Length: 262
Image 1 (cartoon, rainbow, N blue to C red):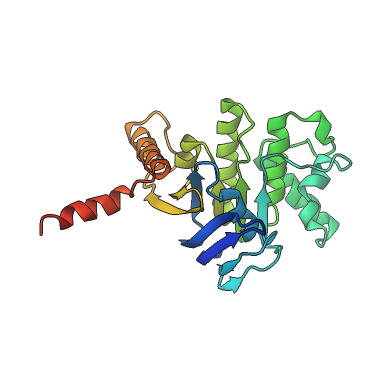
Image 2: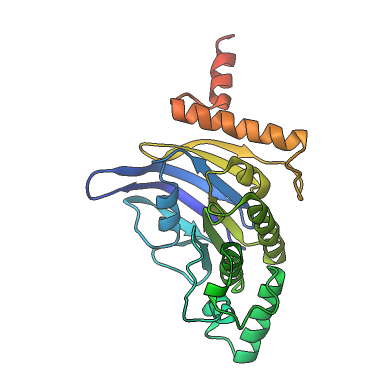
């Protein structure tokens, strides 16, 4: 586990587009943090910076106290699409990041990872023989089999039906429980954010910046039909609505209103 830290992070592209401005934010070691926000708020740009695939214009990103300036072996990524190699078997795809391990250890780790995502015995198959949900399970196993310190997720369940998505949420959390990597996820699905995250950060667009931070105190496993879960969704939706309207977060508004009494 390793804490993640953004310090006055900004990103401006060559054409002058300000994608991010002044992001200062911490993600605790072992915490699952979800980023939500409207289009143009820089969520995917932020993930690319953390993955070391791009450089910030200002500020820095620290993982375990060390600056991220390039891709790192201890940072795993799950993309929107599975991105499996079609010429490799399911087992070889899942164990792609274990090339430096002895063959017996690699086989053992891959078999265990596939079993935990419900794909025991699927190792010899080809990606084309799997459904979309099964392919994404392989992607989850591949990202977590190396036990990364940090896991980045860019809407990995957005293309799946509700039943498959709920199943994969369970598989992901079961794998996360084993080594508790720090997780930073981007999602447009408020219910998914409330299901998975310990904390939800609402971002505001043009340029992308932090609008509000909402703690999620619900114990796991979370019941999406419970009144507490519904209340959590409403809180996130209210913050999203205010961010898109350009209004102040409720905490700031409450502080301003309280000040009017003095």
